[in-house]
Image (cartoon, rainbow, N blue to C red):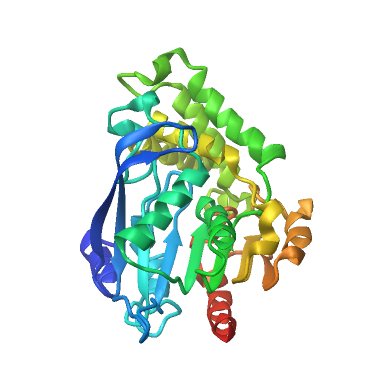
Length: 348
């Protein structure tokens, strides 16, 4: 096991992250609700560069998945495989922006105090707030790349459509550019109803974690895990039970029921399919064959990517290095495609 000191040393192998908070007064949500002040927490790594006209030239926006945070990208599994000297997103070369989305991390979220009275935010609200952070808060008017994992990947598609002239390249990891439907939608509904239908949830005013949170977490585990990987890690009955018990105990300590509920319900407005032709950026959409959230047998990506002017779909075969939906956070699997995308998007 790696000690905390060793982990810290690994994290500091690249430029030291700088943390900040961008506060938006009277933020209006798509629902018509407002917050007197919306806070977006973020981290940046590296220094922003501009050309002679003042345009940002090296900014990269990296967007996390549902219930995640921007800080998760700073660990040895991700950051030290991408941000170190000579790597694809070398922090001496790029200015990396790692925000916590609305409802996540240290940004404004239900568990801050409003609970179920927090505005019913959507992906559209999240992307709008990200854009304001980038342009108003950090004064960045151009992005070299938007890279996103899972929910962040879906946000990347939306960035490409809403601000087509602002982004050179998009790399959505573990996503599909269509409305969430079928089993994906069903699994999200099961997460939501497991919490909402539990009397202990008490309309969001629980005093201890409601038992419905366990059902939601169990569905999340099935939704995002890989049969091959889980069997390799837990090849016996007792090991499987112990692995599941450990995972649940860890998640119970860090996941708030209201935050989880809002995070999964926020995908209800997602549907970039009608506007895919608007995307001007080079797009490398990467999925893995063992992803139960975006199963390749649906044929969605093969169909939709044809509508993207500079689009390419990459399906990574199931193997010892893939981890189901979580393959999105393993640069050792798809890093070579990122390097290729950065090279081809320079032509633009």
